Length: 191
Image (cartoon, rainbow, N blue to C red; front, top):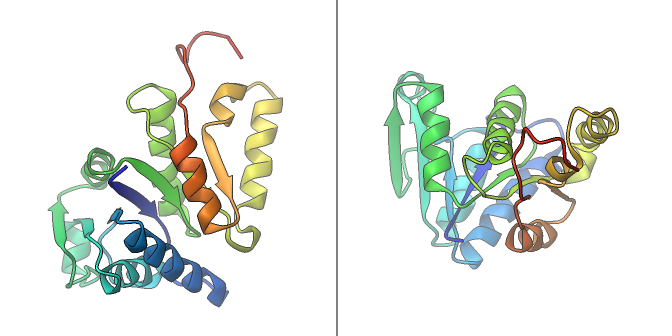
């Protein structure tokens, strides 16, 4: 694993623990010699994360749309800033550049990006791990929803296990490294 794509908020949220976790995750990436791929913003959790990786001497590749650059939210000090035309191109570019995906706390954009990466894994487009860093239980209700989706037959159990969840930073790294993608076709009705 060389680079991890991190999806997270362009805001800080109300709990300072979210910003602290973004910084700690960035420091952990740099300490492990892993590069960061992310949405390219210099604001919110995204900015705190990127700044921490850079401060630790790590590589940061931001992928951002031209429209967001024009709104002046692009981080100006990255190792590499890739400017694309659309959100679709942004997600595809981040997926190509990364070896794993992690969602920190965030809003609709974070969920959109995470679930698209996860769905691509489910469909066999990639075999990369996808994890939720569940800071202060931020994703507890989402995890319960996913468990309910599996219990109700909408998410095959083997695909539910694709969603790696950890409350602590070292645990998410361990789960990403140990990940084995499910075998078989998404469309076959096998557990």
